[in-house]
Length: 539
Image 1 (tube, rainbow, N blue to C red):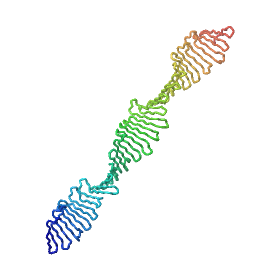
Image 2: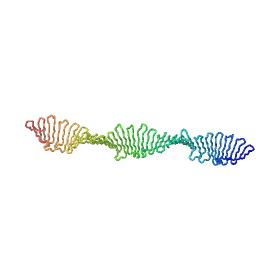
Image 3: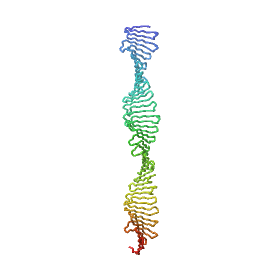
Image 4: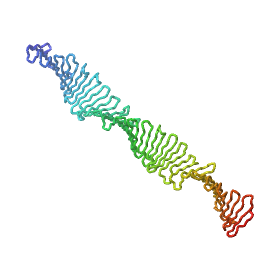
């Protein structure tokens, strides 16, 4: 060891084989500076400079063989710098808080701060490939945060001890995403362009729930499902309380809003079924086929007794509507305007109203014996057919405005029938095989015409009073041509028989008989009730 003192009093000492590795020591005259150089020190230290009263407060500087070094300051601060090719610089303050600055760090770090307690670490980056601007790491933070990554675009991410992750959007977006320890993800939005306010996504990806505010279509939330037991894949809920389920097979189920218990199901083929509760029109269910060719609406407690209405398009028989009533009765309507009505349970009646308004009704087990009734649209004609009527009537036809004045025609099982006229006249005809025809006029006068009558009758007249009756004959074996019968006649005559040869005979109440000869003979014979007949001239 050798020591030298220069002119200013500064002392330099050189060492040889010093066990501490010292090779040179410089000490300033005033004692404010001391510099020691080392060789082959195990810790790589090359020199140590010590200061007193330095303006920046440095008290020691250690320089290492690799070019790194560190300053120590009066307040306990330590500043380290890197070696050759390493531009990093570290400062450890009096509390042990450590700040490191980096230049050209391959990871992009530019600065790092570490608290003396070790509970906080903050690293800043430049040009980080994933856009990270800084990462803050925490230990023992009250809210459980362990890491916060902040990105250049202003977005960021918090991570928590329990595994939760919270992400927020960039500048100008107020979205925030939280991923809990199970991996469930919740995102809150503010001023989202789509109106989203919150979104939840399950960790397994089987459930997603998005809530909206002020969406133009009134949607409040949308839930999406995977693997749900009932096959639902999506549920949309609206602000008015209505909603819609969609299923894997394409089925759609819709329900009404507050105060509306209706529910609509659209199956995979597009067929639509709607259930109603408390519908003011009484609807309880409505089915609409996907093709639009069939629609069926069911009702409850409808005032008119309608139970269901079915509507058709393109049906083979031309039916366009069928109405079924609570009592089992119903009505079909057809494209051409025809209407067919049937009776209820125990009532086999069926009514058809054609396109012109003509009405035909078929009856089964009608108490009056009716089997069919036809009514014209104009109301001018009505025909009723009967079966097994006790009076043997087979049909009754009724007329209005008929040219011949007929208002009614009754036809019987035996082929006979009767016409009635506006003026009260009645005309009756005989059964099949008999050509008789009877006319009773408005005053009650009765005229009957016969053809092929077994008694030879051809015509008969009866007065309404019953006081006069005349019957005309043809081909009677006794030559009688007509017989007149009287009641209450002034001369007491009760009968007059007129023969084809022109002869005739009067009979009187007292038994008197007066006969006259044929045309061209004036002989007359009178027989009283107990005397010999007297011949008298015919008058």
